[in-house]
Length: 272
Ligand SMILES: NC(=O)c1ccc[n+]([C@@H]2O[C@H](COP(=O)([O-])OP(=O)(O)OC[C@H]3O[C@@H](n4cnc5c(N)ncnc54)[C@H](OP(=O)(O)O)[C@@H]3O)[C@@H](O)[C@H]2O)c1
Image (cartoon, protein in one colour):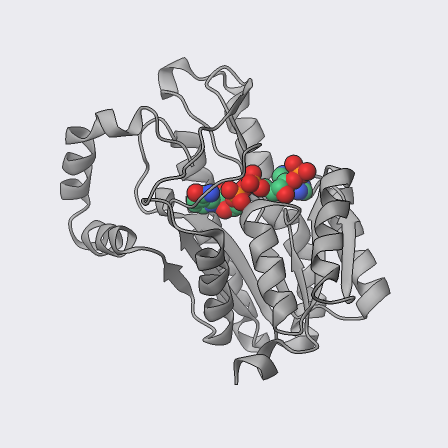
């Protein structure tokens, strides 16, 4: 059943040379989907292309920066040139940050919004006309940090919350065209060794590895994304904590705020 949804379809996954995006691309490939992978570092992208070729030859690697209008246009144009259609666009690119708002170099907000918001909007706009033809899906990868603004993650939380408004507007506009628009709120997930985030002063910092039981696997996220598409769901919230937070925040936002204030210490070293 699921295979007919994905077989011979074309999926673009932004930021898929590593991490969660790569796991999503591999999951599509296993189901017979033609995949378009993307990243800025050509060596990393080429290595991932070779890995996916172990599963399918129907893979296209487009090296570009989706936080630029020209890079995103290139991604969509090259996909159409090679495969002639787009069924699924997964807006996965995103970067995290850390720092108390009072200490932030204001440029941190610019960096985060360019990557997390414009990096999703820029590929989406030129892709819409093609996804109308296939009645396919546009999925935005958000985070549990978007349920309630989190301390030390203000730029990240707000950028991921912005994706919700974008998805809501798009759902209404495209309802008549039968485009499915999904939003996946990802929980704490294992990370690549080289994963970086933006520090309060605007410099890049390497994140500590998450080889602990609290982090879910990247394959778990990929599974949620493919389920979001196959069920044409709007919002998929990961993990029990995420579901509880979502439930409480919708009904008792000030209670959630009180819990966060009480536990603020836990967020000091917490980035995603
Ligand atoms: N990991 C978590 O715990 C977690 C939790 C909640 C939500 N998320 C969200 O899940 C998504 C993926 O996270 P991740 O942990 O897998 O990230 P990651 O390991 O840092 O991987 C990011 C990927 O995107 C590429 N990339 C970054 N900026 C790009 C750009 N402007 N244009 C094109 N490619 C770009 C990177 O390659 P290059 O650097 O070579 O471009 C890399 O392949 C993000 O949106 C993140 O916010 C993650």
